[in-house]
Image (cartoon, rainbow, N blue to C red):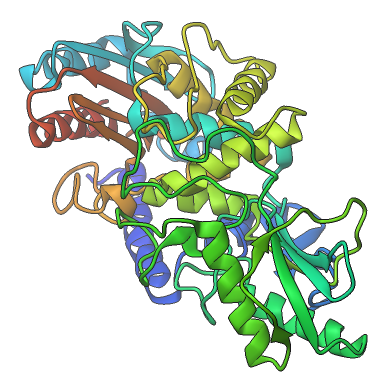
Length: 480
């Protein structure tokens, strides 16, 4: 006889497939959260997430629109348990029996650690070396995301402004560190700060003041310290600057490695100058670096994608540029310098304040490109459990941004097809030479949301290591 919980599970998977198709058609990014989850979140509060107009270019935050409460509550782990009271939850002994042989796979290198916990209770279901610091590669982005959301909240928007300069006829383009800033008329990555709209608003303000010609300066001094990542010139990341359009990409790509422009801030200013000229403002000379006068009131402002959306985009695509900027935004919100060192202190402090064990951890960068980063599987699983805490809704984009096995982002081709983990595992990948990692969540057959983390070192073949990690994730998904 088919059990009730099996019918629910089949329906859930079918619903996931339908939602993935809808996202593919409509685009996943909508003002900061995936559409379905944003609508669900809006139904819990008194206000919604829609932006129904406002003061374009005036620097005023969009106002939330009222929303009606949800009609039906979502099916969650409690509902699944109630639907099938006879289904035994996954036991730690059973899980250990399944995971230990898989963890011993030589493809996983000479060192491997693991943690699996029940996010609702904090119960440890399986662990192996959970407090051993390892190089986490891009799974460190989970820590970056959690710290940034804790410091600023998911609705925070980053401003890029145009202000009067120090002298007559001078204006300054001021970077606020918006990684979603785009010079395209319609960004292929979704909503974000628009250099085109900013130029239109600035031109309108200048004309209203009777100014037809200007000298343009640009201010990228918000971030301090080295702009180049310690790994050096690399197609996986641009110079880390507070003023950059389209992540310094010279083509239409929105993710993945590509050679970047030599000076993203200067190129952004040059593009802005061209946009002003198209709108009837004469810009004399080539834009030059300048410092915006203290207390100068903006002539025009454009706002980034809400932070929750930046986190989702960063995690889904493993976007190193967004990661490094969010680490610096965390530093600024914490009163630290917006540098590698300031970000490291700020991220550590934020995670410690959340009650997480950061012993042995090091956040030398926000992206995980550096081998100086250290994390434990206990910390990574704990971060995911914290993001699942109903009392921490501001951290939810950490979960909604995770790639879905077989469907999205860096897991699109992993655990796909007939894998029992397809559509069920959501996880952040990590890859460096000799380092492979995977950390994420899955709902087990008993309806519990489990957080897992697997870290490896000295892996001989990255493809084989990824398959080994995918087998571990699939085992967590089907263990009973």
